Amino acid sequence: HRCLHSFPTRRSSDLLGPLDGEDGARVVECTRLQTAEFAPGAIEQICKEAAGNPFLLVELARLHTEHPELAVPTVSMVVRRRLSILNVDEMALVELAAITPGPVDAELLRAALLEDSRALSLEGAGLRRLCGLKILRESSRRGTSLTNERYDFYHNRIREAIKAEIPEPRTRILHRRLAETLLQLRPDDAEALVRELLLAGEEARAAAHAEAAADAALRKLAHARALDLYQ
Image (tube, rainbow, N blue to C red; front, top):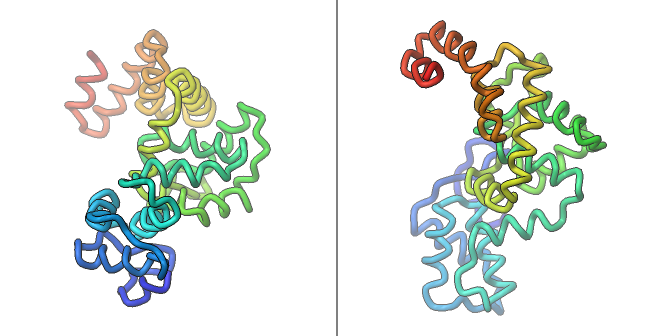
C-alpha cells in the first residue's frame, strides 16, 4: 500500500509491525477512500482490533469503508472474507495448517492432504496463492524435512480466527489425520503424535505412545515435560 512506503521495512516479504497508535491511525487514514467517512471512534477501534499489524489495519479499514454499517469490523470478518474466495482444496490445506501448534512442514501438509485425495499443488501455484492472499507465509524456522519448506500463518490472529470457524467434529478428524501422517512419516516424533491423538479424542492410543514420548523428553533433559507424559 502506498501509505506504507513511508515506513522502513525489514525485508520486502514482511509487513511492518506492530505499529504504535499514531502510526496505526496514519495507515487507517491513508486507506480511507476520499469520499468515505469513518464512524466516530472507528479509527481507534480498528487500531485496537489490529493490535498494530499493518496488514490487519489496512484490511479492517477497507472493510469498514466498504461496509460502514459494520460499526466494529473484526479480524474474524477479514478472515471470512479471504476464505470465501478459496476453493475446497485450498480450504483443506488452511484448516490443516490452522490446527497445528505452529509452523508446519510442507511435507507433512502434502502427506496429510493425500489422505483426503486432495489435488492441490503444494509445490507451485497452490501455496503461492495462499501466500499472496496473506493467509500463509514462508516461515523462517527450518523444518525437519529434507526440503526444509515450512509455512505459518501471516499473523497468529488469522490462525485463531480460522480455528474458531472449524466445527469440533471436523477438528478431531483433522487431528486424527495428522496423527496418522506423523505415524507414517515421523514415527520417532512421539510427543507430536501423542498431542495429535489426544486432540483427536483417542486417549487410549495416545497413552500407548506417551511412554516413548516421555523417554524422548528425558533425553532432551525436559524433565517437567517428561513427568507430564509419564503421568
